[in-house]
Image (tube, rainbow, N blue to C red; front, top):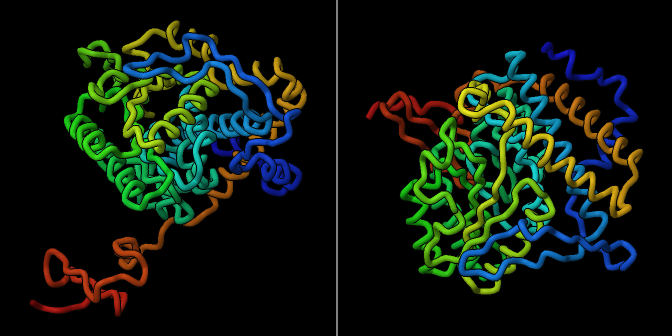
Length: 406
């Protein structure tokens, strides 16, 4: 697909930009007006507990929160579809892992926590980067290797960061002990915050995951170990790689909770419950969000050689998180069909604009100083950073090579 087929000229986007500003991510605040509250009734299949009383199936939330979750999910879906097209147009190179079908997890978590809570995940991270606060332009700019990207075009799909979000990590399972460290920081500072440490079913058998469980329980850390079980670690089904596929029971001495990760309302309720559990002094919790990715493991994987097209279509037609929330919005009278269409149209226009802005952004300049600019927090640099050989030594004072011979 050509790039011009997925973007619109900026000259025609004035009206849609106003719509995009309404759609742009803001933290939803719970309303105090009773007329703005709606009651959600989740099915009994939403949760399964291990050594734990599951969250309430009936709860109240605001109409604004429901609308925000819908807007978040449709923007993430559009952003990932644009990424797919940009990759096929050779605008994106290298690794690219999309989360189409899994939007309910990032959105459910983000709407249940605050910006002072911390999140870390693996390389299927574009949606998390967006809901944590980065505009779509910065996410797509990173994918395309542009200077406007969240890592200044030097990280790509697997290395995205923003305030309160610590990646986007490319080494399988390596983010889990880092997440335990983030939770330790919250406890050390006496903060009423928690860390969501996410990993996939493919990483669940890593030894460092269990080491992190042990430390988190030993030190009573406010850490939610959250397994995004999308059924296939790369191309291997969970049943072929794991002797125990109930990942929420893996904590052994840590309580666990299994969640329907295709239902954003269940993800939202479970995430609120998990945070409250951890910051109340109960220590860590193991969550399993049972979900499904519609595409392959990455853009290089068609995703159809190890599962049937019928299986994928069944999940799309019966379990899609966006369609599920849309049905709730209509049934609860939160939005009309016309209003929902306007949200969809605004999301499409916003993402189209962001694609064009990202594509127009320059690549990083071909100068050596860019290689060293993120080694230290600005102002805390050492005078010189010694290289492999004397010619590689970089002087932060001169912003150039030191040209010393040792």
